[in-house]
Amino acid sequence: MSHLNDYLAEKRAAVLARNAAVEAGTAQPAQLKARVSAEGRSGVRRLRIRDHQVISDSPPDFAGYNLGPSSPELQLGVLGTCVTHIFLIQAAERQVPLESLEVEVTGLIDPRAGKPGHEQTPIWPHLIGYTVHIDSPASREEIDALFEAVERNCPILNLLRHPQTIRAEVRLVDSKANSSVKAGDAVAA
Image (cartoon, rainbow, N blue to C red; front, side):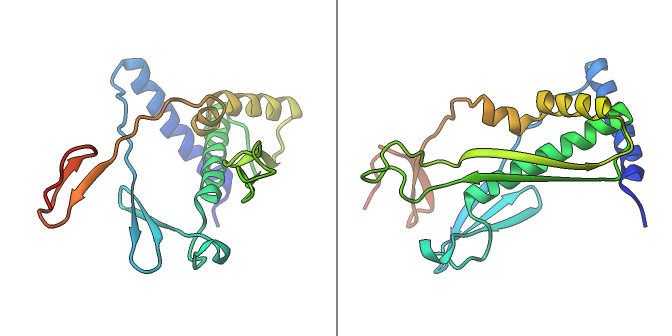
């Protein structure tokens, strides 16, 4: 069976190649895209990214069928996967051996948010935190430096800490004509 340190050797080669492309000026931005559709009687949300699909659903107390994680749970999971990935990248780049790595992310969401008596309770996931469990023969100083590098370089962690303005628009679809129009445009009846 292969071990995490075997993977880190592969990861190091990929990181060095990517860094060389950046230094050579040949690296380019990547356009990211995700598409989500609500489906049929279940209302599950099918998330499509590249050739991958993930189902998101609500728990039964929110008219869901518990067929997948909720959006807030997915957000915590996305943070966890990104922190884990950046730990692997930084460990590979710094040649810090890792026997095992696990990231646990927690948060709170309150269904009472915005309701009478809870007007100040955030409607979004909050009190988010993560704990990293590492088994490594590296020194405490190496692990602390690794952690600092992850905190500095993790895209999703830093997105959540430094949010940006999100552009949005609504397009109405005329299913009879099978064409889309922008919100505010007249739709023929």
